[in-house]
Image (cartoon, rainbow, N blue to C red; front, side, top):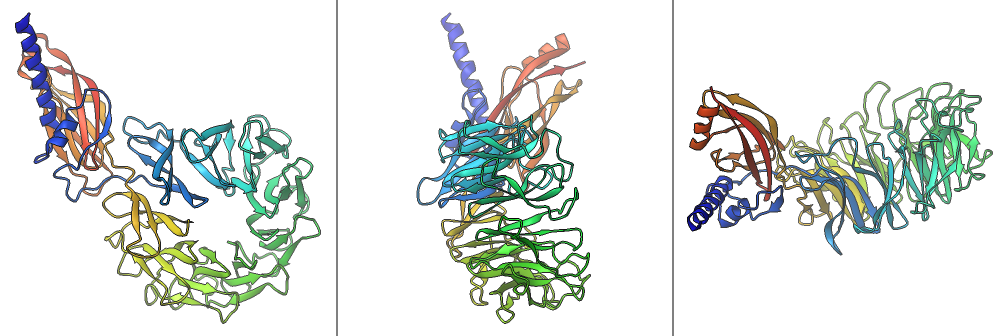
Length: 606
């Protein structure tokens, strides 16, 4: 008995050594070996830096839905351990923390598809509201803690799918308004105070589950103007028109039947300026033009017929600055799109600047606009310089190109315009660097590249530029960490990676294998999330092996591994012809994460 115990102890020791040797990189220290020798159960752990990973990259977490709530930033991101989840960052408090997991990741570590994930984030008087699910079929709220992140109510769907969920969730004071389908009434207007009992349908506008055609699809473009909610909806009788609501059934009414009869006026581009709302619409006589409304029928009117007749003067966007001036691109019969402004009156709706374009010139950049205080920033081309950054105070003399970022006729192409700390942040390319973050105070000297984050001139563009707490957050890929969350105060030194959320480590080993009946081996396909070391643990029937996985800048790496039988296994194979084996695989990512999994295969030999 004592001899049997001793043999079992030596066998366990050999297996432990085999596992450690299999997952330790060439030159790796004891810490990496210890991590590899963890118990044989599915796990994820973080190790010290691994050897032979110099220059390796980790996959990105792809931050999205960046939303400011009282100076803290909430966002959604993916990592190999938690799947799709809600995160929060606050540099003055708790740093960057995981709030709640939603997307149970698959074995490979990726979101299961359209069945999970948070979206439509909105601040409602200091509380975050959002939806969970592919169609946003659950309404949730959060106070920034895991315990305080709770499901409010379930729906068939939340938000307007056809219109891209623009204004899907909108706050007025401490009340949330949103469009949802409860499975009985169809897509209707709802409100919520954050409790299940306080989440109620405001009004059954469509009168039943079938009341909307493919194009209207329920309330959309929800926009708060003062204490009034404006939105577009088709009641099944008048077509899609402008409506308003004070949160009560009787106070939810059509403002005006802009296009008489059952035809839709196709209300779009809603923006609030004080207690009034501006939008574009068609009345059946004029084309798409700028309209305004104070919430009454008499106070809802065409602002100006910029392009007389049935031709459309403007299709948006419409942007309001702090002093209430509304800016928008428009075109007349005599030229291309130019910058216009309006104070809500016909006389006060004017062309601010003739940008020198002509109809048919193609894209002019006027789709990108943002207000900073009383000033408007926008992207435009004057026919000489390409699409560059411009600024306007609403006067012709005060409207000029800020900087020729990419000199000559080439486009600097400013996009992702956002205000933070009293200045503008945007993404542009100067012909030397790739698309990078820039900032501007409206002057040439105050307009500059913030930081060259991605050294590749053809690298991916920063996205989701969002102001929060006086700084700006955005997602960017520095060619090392993948697309992750960054923060900037407008200086190069103050532009930093917030957190490398997705350090990799997820991997998948196929259940299917290709058998070599001459050698008794099987080959299996492996896919890893980034680079690192992949190993097969030695056991009684399988030989241990290890290989480095080079990502070469890729988020996913695919390769094949051969499982080799031990001498003992070969003896069984020669005698029996086949052998069922258990294989344990471990992937140690260059980001420091370690994951293991177990699979079963059948070895065969003729």
